[in-house]
Structure formats: C-alpha cells, structure tokens
Length: 448
Ligand SMILES: Cc1ncc(COP(=O)(O)O)c(C=O)c1O
Image (cartoon, rainbow, N blue to C red):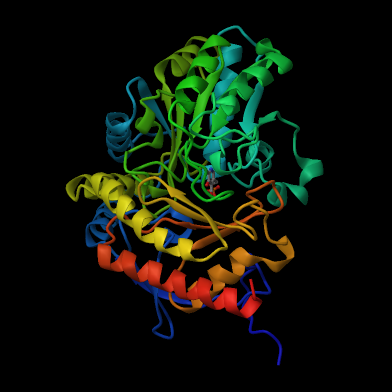
C-alpha cells in the first residue's frame, strides 16, 4: 500500500506528505478531526503568541466585521488602523513613529527595501540602492525577499530568478565563521559589515537587514551582546539604514516587545510580526523613523508602493485586540521568565551526544544536532535528521519547527521551539519529555 496522502483539490506544500485535518484550537493545543491533541510547541511557524481560541479576539473580530471589514488604503483610513498604529508606536523604540501595514512577512520585507530605496532617492542620494543581508538568514519566499535570504536550500531552485545582493557572515557563535570563541572575540562578524560596505562602495549601499535572533534557518541564533550596537555604529558611519526583521522575534517572542530592545538599539525600520495578530488574521507592518516618511513627503510626495489588503480594518482590529490581550496578561514578561525555564529544561537533552547546542532568548529556543560533538561535524543531509525528529514528535502530539542547512547552507539540523507565551511550566515539561522520547527513539533506530 502506498503512502497516505490528501486526495482533495488543495495544492499542498508537500504533496507527498499526509496532513491531518485541524478542527479546532484552544490555548496551546490544536485538535484534529480524529480528536488527537497536539501541543503547538512552535506556534505553527512562530506565529501563535497568545494561544488559540481566545474569546476576546473573536469578539473584536465580530465587532469590526459588524462595522466594516474592508476599505482600500488609497481611499480611506479607519479608527482600527489609527488605533493599532498608535499602539505599535507606543511599544516600539523611540523615534519609530510611522507604521505601514501589510498582510505578509515577505511583503513587509520588500516594502522596507522599497521604502529605503525611495528614501535615498527622495533625499537626493539616488546612488544608494544595495541592501546587504546575511548568510544563514530568512527574510521570505517572494523573489526579492528570497534574494536577501541566506539559505541555500530555499534559494537553489529559484537562483536564476534572484537578483544578486551582497551577504555578510552570520553572528553564529557556535560555528564562528572566524574560528573565534564568544568570550574573547572582537565581534569580527559585525566588522564584516564594514568590510562589505567598503568593498561595495558606501555610496551604493542603501540598507542592511538582519534578524536580531535568527529563526527558521538556524534555530534561535542569539548574537553576542554588543553585536547590534556595533552594527548600528557601522550603519551610522556609512549613512546606511538599519532594518531589523522581527517577523519571528517581534511582539514578545524573545521576552521584550522587540528583540533589539535587549541591546537598546534603535533601528531605522522594524519589520514585524507574525505574533502581531497571533495567527488570528494575516497582518504585518513596517515601523519606520519619521525621517523616512518626511523625505518621501518632501520628495515624490507619494510612497510608490501599496497592496490591496494593506491597512485592512478587520485585521487591524484583531491585532489591536491581540496587543491588548498581551498587555493585560503581562505576556512579554511571561515570555522572558518561561523562556529561562524552557532553556533550563531543554538542557537535559544534552545527555544525547547528538545534541550539539541549545540556545535561545525568551520563548524562542533552538536545539542543534551534530554527528560529533567535539568537531561539530554535521549529519548527512540525506538522513534528514531534523525532519525525522520533528515528524516523530508530531506523531507523539508535539508540533515543533525543524530545519536544515543552518551550518553552511546545506548541512546542519536543528529544531525550533516557540510555544504560545501563555504556556505553563507543566506544559513545558511535557514538551521536553516528548522531545526526549523522540530523540531517544531516532537515535536507537538510526544507530546514531
Ligand atoms: C524572519 C522572517 N522574515 C520574513 C518571513 C516571511 O514571512 P511570510 O512567510 O509571512 O512571507 C519569515 C517567515 O518565516 C521570517 O521568519
């Protein structure tokens, strides 16, 4: 008998895989049509910050739908958009006073790139157009965002369609590209930005984009303290905009509203966030410094950009209710404290020699697997170790977010955990217990 697949008309991401039918969600749990319970240990793909099935959000949705669900951004503003922009400005680093709404992360990344470009042209520096990004990064799957992304596996198939853009090394302390130790290094990885700006020509560089804590491509890579401060200095020195991609990290995931808050760095733009509406509706935004809007206002007068669902009132009302819920239940602080608990508990997995590194910030944690702990040699990517462990955990009722290629674009295995910020200690214990069992079984079955 062949493998079970979904025989309906949906074009699934992976047509060879069988997807159970999700029926409902409550708190940290998802239930499928056969009544099976899953712990949403990664909030889907780092989306579900407040948990599933929250009544207040349903009420906000219905209230706004009863008023108006759609207006076009070229014709109207709404109280819902105004209120949400106010709330985002209040939680953003000082000076990020303008909020542009979008409905997808890739769309938001490309909006930031275009905003930077128009800023440079409208203020009279049209030679600046390049956006520098990093290897071992993910900024989205549309062609522009994918060109910035530094993940060989995702890029390879579509490479001929991607514009060539400069990439610098990641801040990857476990696998330092310069062979340094975290305790004694001089932030060589940050200096790589200056080197690259000089090679490319400062007059040609518009912006630098980075995830403050890398998510999908490497499993919660936290930079050394001082990294983003040095990056800010370099950007200032060469008149380059600093754009931080907080699509995963934004809105409390790392224990602060924004991950850059850990280092008191003020970027020129923040791109955020899956957690903004916690999965209840698609909404993202770019929060930008007033100087960017002002240059555009005084230049062209019109930001030459726009999407049909930008500023969608229903989405804005939902996101607004999510931010209220986060505030009311003090979920940012909860992410910080429960994150410490999660990392501590994950430490027990070090008993497996294949566990090379455990890292994270707030409720955003990664476990990296290695064939040899001493040499950090990776497993053959053909083994698909991350998927084996992820699929086994899924079978046992734990959803995590496995990934490969972190070490060098092709090799490397990790899993990412990002449970809803409402999670309890007991539920974290359960996550770690299921992971433990899953790793144990795969180690035995594959003789690792
Ligand atoms: C850091 C980062 N940027 C951008 C994106 C793209 O977002 P979307 O999938 O909504 O296009 C993602 C998605 O995982 C992401 O993690």
